[in-house]
Amino acid sequence: MQEKIVILDFGSQTTQLIGRRIRELGIYSEIIPYHKYPYGHEADEGIIGVILSGSPLSVYDPKAFTIDLEAIKGRLPVLGICYGAQLMARTYGGNVEPAPSREYGRARLCDIDTSCPLFEGIANGEQVWMSHGDTITLLPESFSRIASTDSVALAAFSAGDKMWGVQFHPEVYHSECGMQLLRNFAVGICGASCSWSPESFIESTVAELRAMLGNDKVVLGLSGGVDSSVAAVLLNKAIGDRLTCIFVDHGMLRYHEFEDVLNDYRCLGLNVRGIDASDRFFADLAGVTEPEKKRKIIGADFIKVFDEEAAKIKDVRWLAQGTIYPDCIESLSITGMVIKSHHNVGGLPERMKLKLCEPLRLLFKDEVRAVGRSLGMPQHLIDRHPFPGPGLAVRILGEVTREKVNVLQQADHIFISGLRKHGLYNKVWQAGAILLPVQSVGVMGDERTYENAVALRAVTSTDAMTADWAHLPYEFLAGVSNDIINKVRGVNRVCYDISSKPPATIEWE
Ligand code: XMP
Image 1 (cartoon, rainbow, N blue to C red):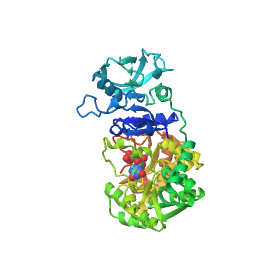
Image 2: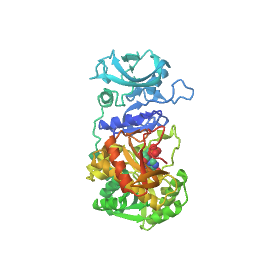
Image 3: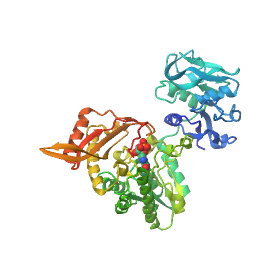
Image 4: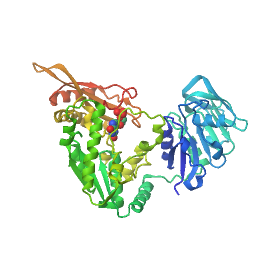
């Protein structure tokens, strides 16, 4: 039975980070929506401890999310973080009120109870990160304060020998002693054995896949991205040629990407079919300018092409996908708003009547990369920037044509190879060029030009949920701009996008 720490999600932005930190400690963790805790089945589920996350809500809000703490109390160690801590305090008779001044940002720990196992190895004066509008003003009688900060008297508490609460966020990087505190909880208190690693994951997943799939055939859609590639290599290790991969070229991939990536896949020993379906995609996109419509057309065409190709494989029973953990965490729908309809193959399993196989569904992106490395995949496939399913179509504003794709591919190629050449590629989360439907006047030699503008976008991020524009060196940008304008016909102006997300998004459409 896989031992695990369960994180009950009350909708905080940092819930995923808690999960990551626990995994970084070599301990398997799962994030579950707060109302889906498997009451009564702890022993069966291998749960060794529970963490209650933060939340955008207040515990005294009439619509506050709540759980049956009594059902867990005393049976398993529980750590409440921020809202989680406030929920514990309020449930057992304490007070939570709006803080006189909202408590955000850095604070320093003081008055630590050094006998408390949660604070082992943590000293007064260490920095922690606060982010809350409410604060605990009175602890329940049976609770004891175990730490304060300069501005928050009840920064941490214990309640008997199985419950702890902290009003700060140990999971964020700015909490210097955060990892130590989480280790104290997970290892010291819950007794985790820290045996979760990419190698152990590969070994157990290959065995599970073999048991689950038997002699069945599996089809998988490759996108060129890290997740589907790692899923394919893992499945190939488990079932070899009974896996058929389909790599569809919709015509809007990067410069030479289809050929290069296909070649990489073949070198990895994958049984892969490359399908050039670009004519169909361009025909269906003709005259379409509205971003969502473009996305829908590409998504629908992709499904049709994939479906047709998969139908050519005899007796296929399973559809494999490179779905990863952040795609699955249901909390994303706790606040759920659709800003853009992401192109994926979500509609396929029902339509094709195939069973779904998602071997990476419990991994975070950095773990997927670690698994890929451990499987011996080439570095350039593993370190690839994320790239949207609809490809350059969402980076060509307005109608998409082959000619425009050709122009953008060249500009994008200059930018991306420049990033690689200058050692900047791995310093940004993702980068690309955008072709704007804007023409402006320029002068080349003695001639007037009236041509298109290209925007360059490079962002830093950890999860694509938020992003900042990358502060690339001016000299580098100057060189790229010069190269693009000199070498790409049809472009006479280059801009650099300095918008963060939010309020902008990473892609322009
Ligand atoms: P936005 O533009 O929403 O993008 O800030 C967030 C991240 O998602 C990628 N992206 C997509 N990925 N299919 C994908 O697989 C899509 O349709 C899609 N649209 C955006 C985007 O590149 C960024 O990494």
